[in-house]
Length: 301
Image 1 (spheres, rainbow, N blue to C red):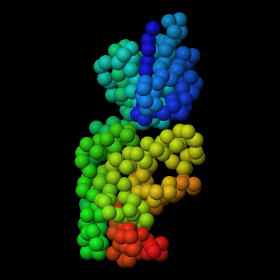
Image 2 (cartoon, rainbow, N blue to C red):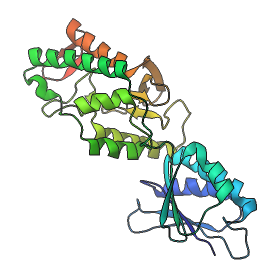
Image 3 (spheres, rainbow, N blue to C red):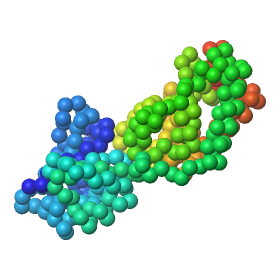
C-alpha cells in the first residue's frame, strides 16, 4: 500500500479541510484524512489508498493526481509530498507539476517539493529599477537626516540574506526585485517611531511574511471576492487597521488594499511609489506630527 503525506507551511485545521475537499474532488476515491502531529501547525494530510483501489502509482490515475497537486500548489504556493516515508528530494515548480506526475508518477522513497515558483529562479537584474530605488532612498534618507529629531535612525538597517530567503520561503516565490532592493537598503522602520509614511508602518521582511501568512489564512477561512486579496499581493505597509500598500508580484503594480473594498492600483511600479514618497516629504505633503510620526499633512495632528 502506498502512503502519500502532503504538508504545507503553516497548515491550519481549516486549511486542512479545504485541502481535503480539493483532494477528494480531484484525486479519486481514496481514503483521505487529516492527522495532527503535536501543534496545530504540524497538521498534515494523508492519502492512504487501499490495496484494492487505484493507487497513485497507477498509470491511469497519474494525470488526475498531477492536476490535483498542481491545483494545490496554486493555493498553497509551497507543498511537500512524501511518498512512502520520503527520501530523495525532487523539486518542481507549479507549471511543471502536472506534466511530471503524469509522465513519471510518484516514486516511493521520494519527497517532492512543489513551489509556485522557485526562489532560485531569480528574475534578471533590473539595473534601471535598482538605480531608481537607490535614488529615491537617497532623497528619503537626506530628508530624515535634515528634518527628523531621530535622523536616519528611524530607518532600519538593511535586511539580511537569511531574512529575505525566509520571506521567499513564506510567499513561495522570489521577492519582487524592487522590493528586495529596498529591503536590502532598509528592512522597514527603526525604533522610536510608529508610522513612517502616510500614517502607515513600513514593514520589514519578517513582518511582511507575517502579514502575508495572516492574509492567506483569512482568505482560506472565508474565501472572499478575488479582488479582496490574492497570494501575489505582498503587503509592505500597514496602518494597523487592516489596510496597507501591496506590491503585486505578478504585475509589478503597487495597490492600496482596503480591509473592506480590496485592492486598487496606486502606482504602476514600486520604484514609482518610492519616488512619490520622497517627493511628498520634500514638498511638505507628508509631515512630522507631534509624536514624531510621519503622516499626510491634512491628517497630522
